[in-house]
Length: 553
Image (cartoon, rainbow, N blue to C red; front, side):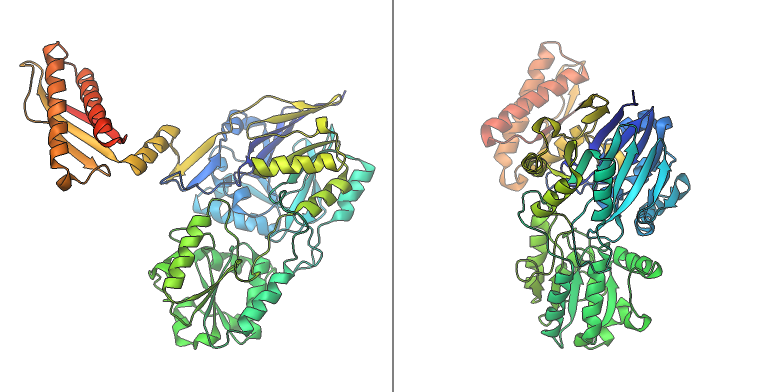
């Protein structure tokens, strides 16, 4: 009998982001991607959300390496946090490793990783597997589908992909190789991108955006244009550059990641920009507006991003006015719609014309829609199928597509974070469930648990009320009237009667507790909290955080 193979999902199945899976056999493991998720609005103060990496830490000696499918943060952004615990080789394309290396360097962990570059079509041993790197088109260059050649047959992960027949760089999704694997060896298990599984038809080619951008530039001669997109979307950047140059404009970058990624892409020969076209952002004001195109970060409305600072009038480099045009060449990631909308509103308040996907087709997705997903299913003819990469509704719809395309219903496994699938000679079955919760990052990793996040939500929604009481346990008396301090509950100057009543209620509760023999600190705090909480609830029908402070003298 052949050795069983287990695929365990640590993130990315039930949310957009945190993509991370583990493929293992013979006691050895290979990690496939290690990404982050950007926080939801109900995660106050959180910078990033990571996969729970405890399963990997608990089996650190078994991890042979990390394979990165492409360079987006939701697939590579967690690498630096993983490298704190595991010093392992990291495999990926030259661009993917270049983008990932920036974050690892920022964390001071570059010596913990050995970066191993792989090329299109290469097949190389990684731990117990032969891993084949198959080109796919996506919204960042040099993405891969990965075929794991295992004792249980081929496990094919599509990576993030679409089938773009006219890509900007001419690098096509290698459908021929995927078809050859399917026809010769067969695909035992297919893991496929589900992001656009609800969308019918086919995703438009990236080249279509270039035509729109060119029209936007040509019809706005004499006006300064600011274009924001993902800094990793090098093909989009190339099309912006081409449109700008063809209309007589110079290019300046705004935002550190845009500058760094542009420099990296030029060095690797992926981006073509003549030296004389680039100008420093501090020199933009010396040029006529019609001679300027600024490439900016901040397409997702991030609070301190370059575009958000422009919208707020707080950028040190640029100030927008009524003659400026801002092109948002990206679509909001689910959860970011409100932030992007707020930035658009502020840009309009400054008088700028704002062009986004609701106005012009200045963006196309990098993910396959239903027609392409069906093409992939028809081409691979997988024995077993697990939809990956998406919220649960995306996974559910992709599973329905698979059964409609002929995959046996019992062979379609709808999984979530923490689930595992075990391949054996007898078939596929669900394996053990592993920890796969959210790990919240606020400044440093792991310092924000669910309890802290819950407290932050209460403070944000209901506010806080603190009572400070001084008690003499020997004399069994409250020395001074308890002081009530509030933040976010009621405005103190306008609620003096309520605060006086709260002070009196707490004093009475403490005196009764002392009379009954309660003199220890914890008992008195509990009585103060109970009395104050009851009054607050009855008078205001709100539930702020109650913080009792009892000082014993």
